[in-house]
Image (cartoon, rainbow, N blue to C red):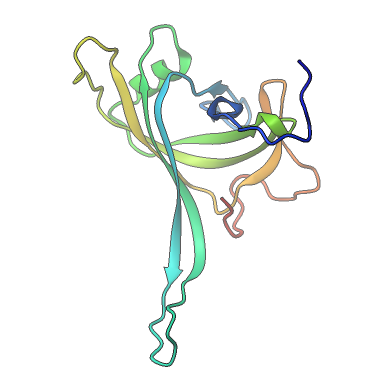
Length: 171
């Protein structure tokens, strides 16, 4: 059945793909994040909320924003990302990159440096796989826009920023 371009249809969760680069800038190793139970994305905002005595409505100004992700996933044998997380179970602030891919927009993507902090392996749920839990905290000031091509993030050439620049954050 052909797509009807005039009818509103939902965008399903699996259409927004997330990848982690567990390699280096010179030798990237992008792995799709799969087997997710939770991938809670939050925009962490720095705000100023003045309490003016001469106004009836409170104002809120967003001065800056960043991002953080709380994750939980089932652990699998022979899964490269799971092995990486388990190998770093006792480590904190491991540098990685996160790439978010909008598959419904011809693989439009954005990427940023994050710090990965895994928690201890969790086997608290009887009869289920071990759970991998932790947080990712954005370490860049801004997302770099681009596309997802051939299993890798490609930054837009018209966007001079690259992960690690010191410009304003976007969510």
